[in-house]
Length: 362
Figure 1 (cartoon, rainbow, N blue to C red):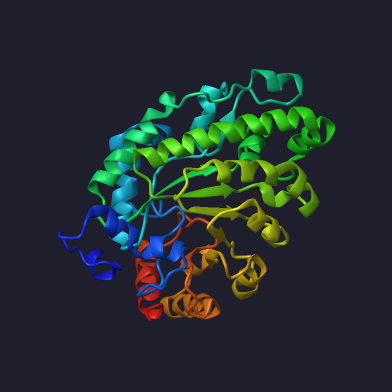
Figure 2: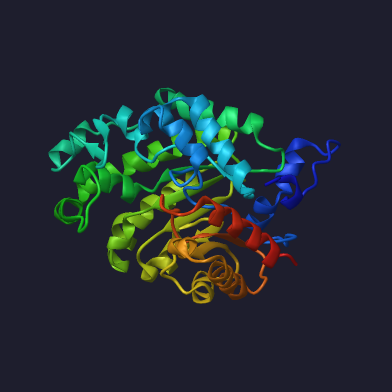
């Protein structure tokens, strides 16, 4: 699908590159400015559902793909091009930034990420090193530079990182968890150790994110994949101050999408933590979610990812329902309520992008 026919700014070579990015569909929406149609990108848009991605992935391990800039750039660029979306998102992972902080990380086939030396006690927090400088993650920034070089001049590149609570839960649990028993136990038993851990993560994240911006990213999404396990009072006390610390430390002028999944009760606090755009997952009624966070901030979302398994008329109806709930208000970025699943037919994702551009046209 050609991307130039659906972008907000025609490819006019007389217009400076920076101006074309500034006036792109996505960046205008982040500023809550009117756009010709609703911008759309897809979380996990470079993923296993795409045959073009699998052609690259089949030759290397996941972590090799993350750490080889030319391959990370290739899958990032290909996904944007074949889908016709209004933004590329850097192909990377949340966890490799933990390795130079003293974490022994392995991606096991069929198991996902495993941390072999988790931090389970207050005493062990001392061996968790702050990321004082980011040269060990140069592969990420090299990928950003390659992507930015080859992206169309009016397509922004999103960088991303995990929020402090999500990264802390990986570090403490040693992987994913259903109940976050170990994480919450440390959090409740020794708030001083918890605060030390979270501050080290927050300061490290600021350096890492700003290096992505310096390398060529136009905007950032923060993923808090696991903070939905917290009650509102616990989120306010143990997580929100550190997410806010990260957002406040991001290079001024760089828009931030703040995304948390799994607990609609946290939306007012997510807004309080900061961000130019608040991500809504599919468990949230879209219209109610935007009212909750306030119309003076943009929102992103929030189609249920499983909708992509439906027939096209049903998919169109469900996409239209999200757009209708947005009511044409400037500041909506269409996305799924979380990442696309590997089982989804790629043609359905391409069709969704076309539907959103058609239905969202003013």
